Length: 263
Ligand SMILES: [Zn+2]
Image 1 (cartoon, rainbow, N blue to C red):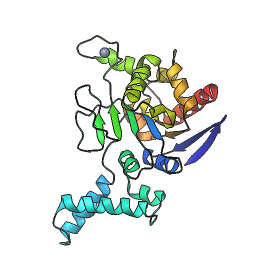
Image 2 (cartoon, rainbow, N blue to C red):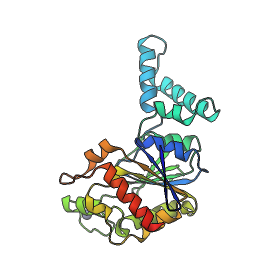
Image 3 (cartoon, rainbow, N blue to C red):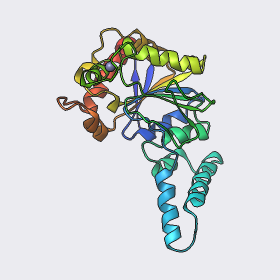
Image 4 (cartoon, rainbow, N blue to C red):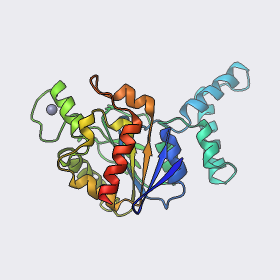
């Protein structure tokens, strides 16, 4: 993890998204507003616990996948909560999309609101609420919001034009404001104490980094306690649009200029 001081703002930069936990764990149980292509809402240690349980079953030491996965995950969380292992050791076994679940289950942070491009219809994680306008919010600590388009689009079926417009509007008021209002409607004091978290793969076109009207983004930067940025260079290449050459280093340097200008 690298710490950049941009004017008065602390910006923590990591390679893999789960490494932001190192910064979050040193915070004071803030909320997190996260901009990400993916929702990153898988259960903590999903892969680690599965493969360990699997090898134990094959060796005849365990009998139930489901039960053993739960035990192994609980064991890791217990060890962390009781200071038997630190956040670096946690990250050795945690994948890049399992950190949100870990962060709320250990109270490192309070609530997480993820504004994502990738849309899940449902989640098997009980800590996750998918904001789809149909399901009742039940005080879950992770809120997923993946709008298919800009809120004022009236098309019945969002098309390729919509996809491009949504990408280019990533930090425009026309896209961000609605998400911020939704976070506030779920938790009225969400933005009194929060971390702004950005996965570079949230940006999929060059234009998306040069917004025209971005008062909401300015506020998000200025009022945040600190900022975390995940480079995720491979995801950036996978998620960028076909005619884009975006790379995470370029995204980081543009974000740093924006933060410098806004702080
Ligand atoms: Zn549309």
